[in-house]
Image (tube, rainbow, N blue to C red; front, side, top):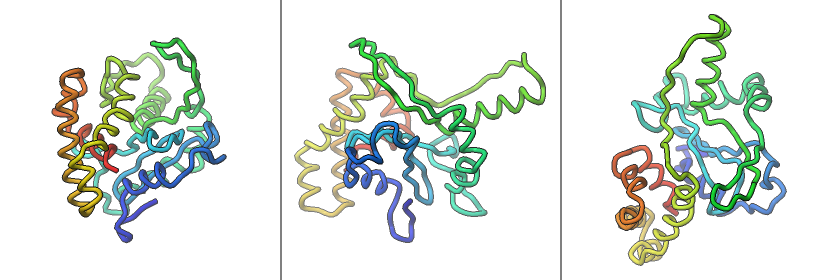
Amino acid sequence: MKNSLTKQTVQDAVEQYMRDRDAREKLFEFGRCVVHFAVDDHEVRFFTHLKDKFSWFLPFNLGWNDGAGNPPNQDGLKTDYLWRRILTRDGLTDILENYAQVVEARDEKTGKKKAVQIWPRLHQLDVVRKLLADAGRHGAGRRYLIQHSNIPWTDADRVHRLITEDIPNRVAADKAYQNARQNSDKQNARIEHDKALARVMTAVLKDDTELFKQFMDNDSFRRWLTDTCFR
């Protein structure tokens, strides 16, 4: 949990998990905990399995103005829904009973099976609860139209590797960014990082137009990828 009083953000929490926490510790073994949260005054992110710098953090936010983040909260912190609505006794019990689980997934390329730990995304959880409540009031048989913001990647495993491994590694290897990290302050390092990411994404265009289009057209995805790659 980070806050503005200490001038730390959710990104600091993410970096602390990836840099300062040992994935070999018992607490971070696969299946040991159902979820880990990184939280500040404005945003929430989560992951289920710590993999050091390759950890996969996902947003757990309400969304605001058809974009990322959370709406203003006149009664408190923007992220207080996490403990007021989600991590309550009833809310957490419901998740543990009906949503959180370990499933077996097959790699489409190798055919190998692996265990995957599931924790629901906030909007998925919210829409299922609303559907169940409505069905409880009106009975079964009604039709619903559900709009969601997940990006429909045609090859999710490949894109996952690109985002979590290839792109961050290529950005980290950029000479101008390396020089800024070693010889400049964090603000200038961030500027050079964003330039390096733009160069990498331009190179990606040659091989992956789908990913490049999302980077150029989807503001939420671009901000998320930029924050994810910045070290």
